[in-house]
Length: 504
Image 1 (tube, helix red, strand yellow):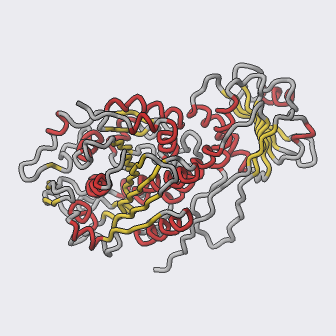
Image 2 (cartoon, rainbow, N blue to C red):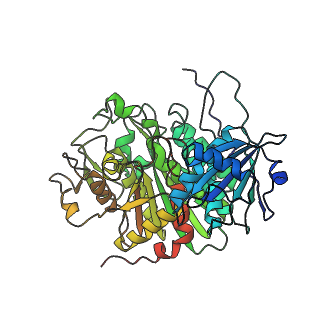
Image 3 (tube, rainbow, N blue to C red):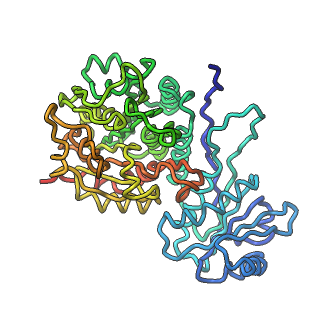
């Protein structure tokens, strides 16, 4: 079968200019598009801003809608888009407000975009600027598209911000670039971003950023006794599956974190085959690994004071004569035996051995990302992601990190009497229960058995990996959720994460 080539395109890196000058008609005449952000409680725009009366008139005719646009009377016929910003809005709401304006500006083909913050009505201008920059960067990146037609060139627009004081946006741009990478990888077709192609992409990025790259092949994992991973991979039609390990060492780092990602590049459900509707989009089942890899990219560009190890569990989950079956008993890398119940619960199998490997490297904290359970979607919809930790005291910290990042998470309990539901008569632990109730909690409880108790661990069940119409700052159904959360947690809440004490 002939397939088109898969080339990782350059990530957007907008040039950001901050201006404290007045956004006059003459100043704005140099831009293809102008985004005006104004407090929702006042008039649409302050009367001191250009074309305020015209915008207000259009807003009135449209029933004071959240977003209005006009064409400015200058040589470029600049598009001016005004959006209402709610006072004291959290990051998610700011992102949701800025996103339609950013998408409209990018779709107009604008190469030079001005962002005007109405300093008379917006107090926290820095937060609004960061949302505007994030949404413009994310909207400018195209997901993979394969066509015989000539592809249009897409350039990242230059963004000039008219604001009262300069806002630092370097971390914002880095996390937005990471989000773009995560979305691109997640969206890539599974016959192109197969296990071999994934390794190639990871190795290319490692060479570009100076990371150390290592691949733990299926043969090596068999010799080491990683029976949980091998059980899933043995049904594939090739031996390309394995665990990708990437190391980043930052000068001056005092802590080391492990980022672990589920990389099931296509999930048929295995012997317990999914129906068509459930299988159609299972090329995105590697979204957790995409988030882990993209978070490393963002944190590297931020020069975050951390050493980082990334572990990506890459395999397919296929049917076939060698595929693992319900009631098989396998021995994991940790030595624990697992009674398999359902072959579509493959993610926790590959993660069990990958978490064991990550734990043996003795990091100061472990964070894993996985599109793990449908129960998480049932519990929190696709607008939040479920989150779990072996340090319950971290729950409020994790919620605050999600709110600050604009990627909202909701904590759930693990362990305790939940663990008794995984008691097995034939092995040390059951993979899951046949009934399936509360499976997001049971999956996290299962994974917790393969994490060192001495290491703070956070598990993110990515129910919001995909959300129709986009989510927060992101304008595509594939959201790349998790990168901005991870970078915020590890930049702004790192001390809370690393110092979390073991539960007594």
